[in-house]
Image 1 (cartoon, rainbow, N blue to C red):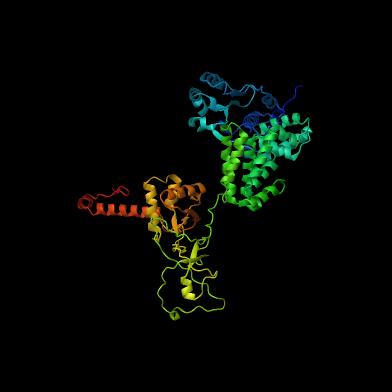
Image 2: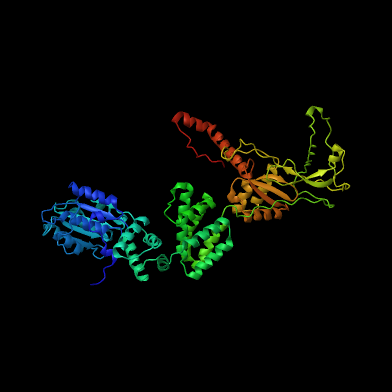
Length: 618
């Protein structure tokens, strides 16, 4: 006797043997028990989930005669009567299966419907089963509509399709539709365990887990892969052999890649990709396994108690979930998901895999280069000249109070005129600069005038021109991001200068795209002769390449400075000023139209209304 494959040998014969389709089994069983039978059924679902099997069991339930030949319609066919055995063998006269993929024309459908006028020969009902019904032509569908809507009482239609979207709504409305769902990998694994126990084939739990995932919800595919695994492993189903057969990537490689990405270790990422190349493992399977692991990590991060303790990989996934922030997990998941589509576009899929993983590393938050802190200014004997157009403002650091001394009250301090600018003695850090800013502030000989003490290094004052330093104070807490509209701004000392500079760059088209957005959306909060500090609200604009291009544009315009960028609340930017100006022009245009005598007369006499948004300033 020839070998019968597992998918056919273990095809369910009754509703109780069906796996993973409890919602369909319950509905059909109750309908059969209560004799509430519809004349047409439509079963939809992906391949290998049991559409044809359900139709055959339904036909047996309608025609079962019982072991003693006295049975009736039942939800539990006996399987031993002539009707049940003939349907299982495919030779029951009153059960007709039509493959619509190869018999899709109107002639074939008419030939089938011609048999509908004759009553059943052996059974209780005639059952017409049309598989892949969506393949029928439009004329074939139209030919069966009338019979499908009002068939004889002894005729039942069973339609099956993998693509219900292609079935006309006129057919869908005449059928009772059931959607057979893809089966979960755990359900497939449990069924494979029972099948292999009956077959007497030893199997590893890891191997069955791989087969359950590779089946992608299809029980027929799972049994076919199990047949192949038994042959590949010489009668044994072992994890190593199944992984080699499927070309699946070992989860250890995936864990190593995710851990390297979490630590920003590019060298480990490249070395792991090279190992995948040497072992001949699929690049697409690598990204697929990474998305599966990242999905489970995201679930663990959102619901820490959602882990399955029986899964040996749960502990490692929980550790990775703690080492990677939730936002980075979502970013990695999305990029791996979309990266699979790029593998076929590259000449070498391993090179494409490496590029996808390096892209994950490049876009990892916190990896982007941060602007270097400005170096401390050194005393120079050469005159320092301010940048063109920069106003000269002297800022003198207050001396730190001595330990144990009490500060004098404001009323007791003698009123003194501010000293004239003196040559610089040495550079000291600003004592009242906002947090995160390291801008040099010079200590002049005015300190000697106030304190009566020469500079600490004892050097004589050198004739050096005073360098202007301006530091913008932090905005108030009540001006938090999200509480201000785009047209609100608070004028600052450097706001006019920065607005004029940016408008000059934009008019000359020296900055475009993201560089222009960085200039427009930023606020100049501090500047001296060779360093400007900008503040922006959006992290996406803080890119090293964008910052360098803006710095080059400023240098070309005559401002030889280096730029630093920080993240914070922006209260005065060129974009906000432009928005305020546009809003003022819009308001002036609306007031001009509303004050027009002709418009007022039309509104008064004819009830005319001004359409909101229709007024545009010229």
